[in-house]
Amino acid sequence: MAKKDTYLALLRRGIDETTAMHLADAGLKIGDLKKIDKQKLIDNYALKGDIAEGVISIIKAGPQTHGKERYLSKVLAPERKKKSKIEEQKFRREQKDILAELAEQKDRLKMAKVDAFRAQKLVMNRLGKTVELIVKLENNMHDESKDDQKVKIRDQLETRGLEAARDHEMLELEGTPQDIVDFRRVVVPALVLHSCNECGEEMDPRSSRNVEDTESWSFICWECDTAFTSPLCDVVDARLENGSTIVIDEEKAPREAVPAKPASKDFTTVSELIIKDMEKTGATADQMAAATEASSLSGGLMSINDWIDQTLAAKGYIQAQEDREDFILRTGAGATKFNKWMKKAGLYFNKQTGRWTRYEDR
Image (cartoon, rainbow, N blue to C red; front, side, top):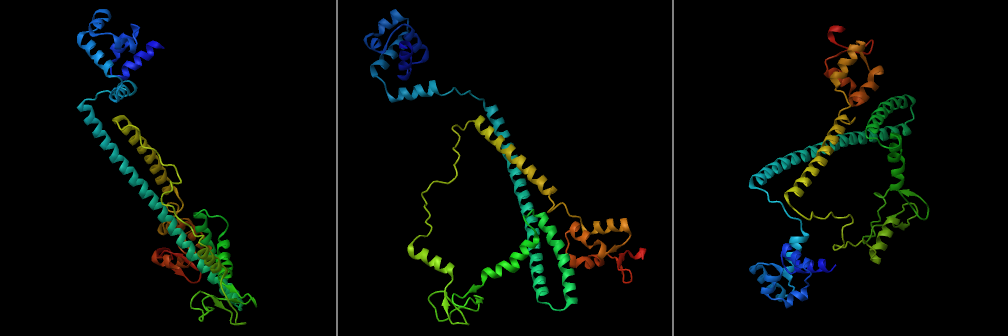
């Protein structure tokens, strides 16, 4: 251990590795070197004059901070291989190409995400409109007294239900479309209406505003003339008065861990980081694009003209009672636009048979 301690002590003072190892193997210690002069180092330990003079000056100066820094930089840090300018220029060109390819992959990923979101939003909007129509039809059917009108409404509900089921399956939602309709038609009005605390009369908040109370938002029952406030408003007022609102601490640390920056930024580290990022982004972009192309939201529907040609080639005619459901599910068009698309395709309608055919086949 004495040799190793002497060797490390000499290195910390800034003496080169060869001289430090030579002096440590000779059995010298730091205290012994403080008592030896230059000539003795030359004669007894075979050191050159300039090296012996440098050792004596360093030992007399004592440990210094620059010596420790020199020790850490030379001994602990790995030696860097010198790269030629040609290799450096070649690496920069490769890095530029990789960065360009990485930017292209990120653009592809962005466009794939946008296309997937756009297709999902289109189907969601269409499902929302269909649900609103079903709610309106069910309300009309609930209030209708004539049987013949109920039959017509049931037929319309059947076609709208097919459209809602198709969009509901595309979005992979839980439950059934009827659950959404029941929530929209039955549950939501019950949540919106307020009941009087005295008589229990339900009232619409739009027509039950207490005009005499200008400082707060309260309601009045027109049956028993009782003024009351909403329980939600009471809870909000209590929180505001007690000061138990949410406070945002700007100096609080992030909830998720922040990745540390790389320790070194040499050519090898930067190249590996860029390549890993490119591989990860490229794989994600390819998977996202493939998923978008294979998704039933965008790529699973046929064009209307292809469906017409295929149906006519198989049957020779198109009839609403037989083909309306298949038309809705495979093309994504609405049930009420069936006849419009048949006319737009240039087909002829036979009123006696109820079939659509081409003019040359009539």
